[in-house]
Length: 207
Image (cartoon, rainbow, N blue to C red):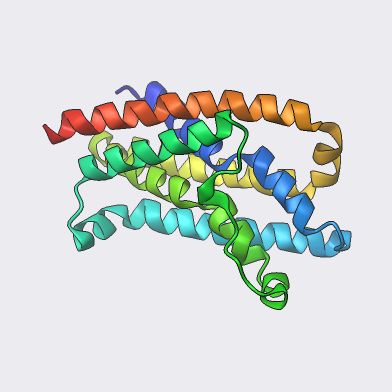
């Protein structure tokens, strides 16, 4: 795969999986009673936590795979299935099971909102984590330039998420529910195609 194609695949995969639009709408629902200064702090902390998590899995992906005896082909197939399922849920306008907040007490939820559910699993969910590991594994074959592309994509998409959350009062006010569903379904179709491609590539690599 040439670098241009890899760049497009990397940015589109990470962007669609993290889904800044959904993150923004969830963020709005979580901080509607919080003042603007605290909203910015929550957005900053959630973005930083998610960035660190994705970078750790992107850089340490090969070590993690070796530790659990998982081949890159197996992870690619598993990740492809996961992306396919998430894509189906997006097409049918349902909240993905990989983005559901973990049930917790109201007090703990208020204290840790930047970590859970925003950073995990809303921004850095299982789909995003699996994808960055797979992409880094593919990039290692291509060389340092491809690895830099994966890391750059993570930084750029997380910044987009941060920017969207900070300006959520403008974005949420300008997007109606019907428009959100249309955008979400289009992204879901793209994610379905990416998931199928991951599965095909994984099967070829395994056999």
